[in-house]
Image (cartoon, rainbow, N blue to C red; front, side):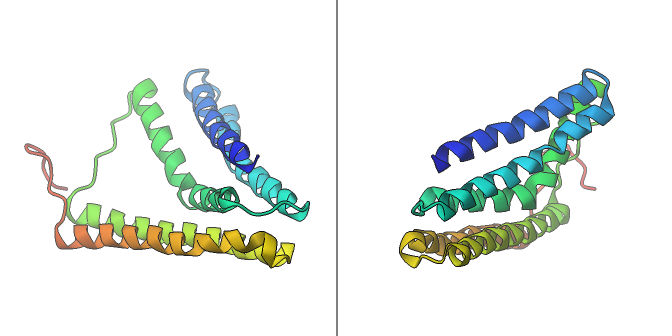
Length: 181
């Protein structure tokens, strides 16, 4: 049931985002469009409530509950960036705006380290949600499965740090014919 809620929330997030951008750019209603876009974070709050209600109602934690915490952490930490990316794509496609330049060299390395900070935030949020659920439920026999998320969170953060280190040591080169800067 929690897995279904995660899928529904993911779909609702993208429906709110893409629907809002369509209303903003295609229907020419920028305020209404942005109001719809800002519904996307509400989806995360609903998922968190659903997970808490499930566990407080006597449910036993599974990896789905941990996945929900990770989803919420990533959505909060990376949500603004995802929305800005989608907005830029819509602006390019429907308003003729210039496409964003992909960073290379030092700019890409800096972007990688900013992602490490975002991933650290996502991991901290997910860990906080899991820890909070364990404390609030107060039944270790029903929540012990959630503790298995912590090594996964460390692995996710470790991979992102390795990614950033690799581009610090070997910066991304520009495509042939493209000037740096």
